[in-house]
Image 1: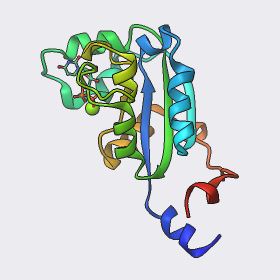
Image 2: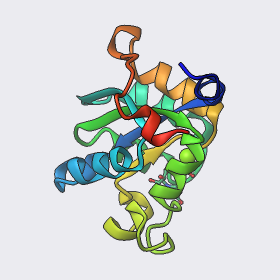
Image 3: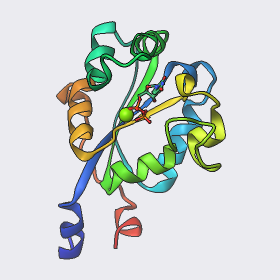
Length: 160
Ligand code: UDP
Ligand code: MG
């Protein structure tokens, strides 16, 4: 490894990205994965799962007490979700930009929610809101053996 590449790798974060049940049902999984792939981030975990009520409540524990919480839990557990762990320099903030703001009607065109959704309660995708949440959520949704550490062949064409 070149020293500057090692230096940038030290700042690598991880984020938890999830295609919500509406995204899966609407056939948007490929489109959504593709946006992160094309950006150049590294995929380290990927699976389709039916999430339990307990897991949904743990994932969204900071929102417990909000009026929309029961509806949110019902939504997230209403069908399979696609779970992803992505790694990269600045991946958390960048993913939030790729995703767009919570309300799809206010999300910028070009963002996932801006292009593909209408309502907050059906906004097709989740993304961690900080590097700390990223770590917590990846650990919550993936067992250790489900995550893969690998060296993308294109690394030096993406990170100088
Ligand atoms: N949500 C909702 N109504 C609201 C706020 C949020 O249904 O008024 C849902 C929405 O699906 C959102 C999720 O709850 O994605 C988590 O809320 P958060 O504020 O964390 O938004 P996010 O980080 O997903 O943009
Ligand atoms: Mg959030």
